[in-house]
Image (tube, rainbow, N blue to C red):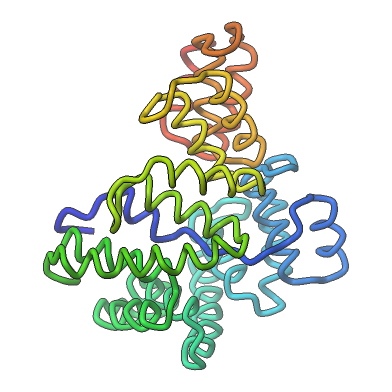
Length: 314
């Protein structure tokens, strides 16, 4: 992206709103083995990230493929990506394109039927040239349509675009604030209904001061609500806040606790920083063996600096 759009904002745009689904790995496995497509996709996600199961890209691919064959667009896109980058399966551009095209058609149909999330995902497919020729104007149209139809991530993304300006729109602080505030309203509505992903996303808006100004107490409130429902991103943020001492009293014991929870759910960033705390002895005795374990898990997910950390401890 150009025109000042940051990597953090681009990455944030890919966060999925995940519907309520059983948390425990054994329940997901049971449903997946019965042929439930959504469960098969979730199990693939667990193996991909090492969330409650061993980290295994090949096993992730196997479950993604099962769900993809049921017509689940998210799984089809995951299969396509793994073929594209050669992770868990041999790289195959032809197969990658075939599965992107299948995902594109599923999302196109849903988008045409008014599915706001599908409109948002389809916009990214147009932008990233996944199963369709790149078309930035169509991508922007779909993002805007999704936002108007009430999808919080699309509202947040439009806020990012207007905040930074660049290849899609001119910088416009007032328009950015409008969309950020609409995203906050959407996230708050779902967060107050108990949705852990919306709770995390709302906390993130407050933490970064998008739309309503920085609100650290609000961020802590919603991160904690989400973290207690096992949202790994929220658990990581609590660890980060307590370790850094940004606007809260530094507490290495709390940081260690929340980093560990997030790390055990497969959050690579938490795995890396948990390793760092064991290496440095922050809130715990120095333990190079434990540090290597967590650096190794982060490295398995290609986390930047993890391999360097492992080399340092060899």
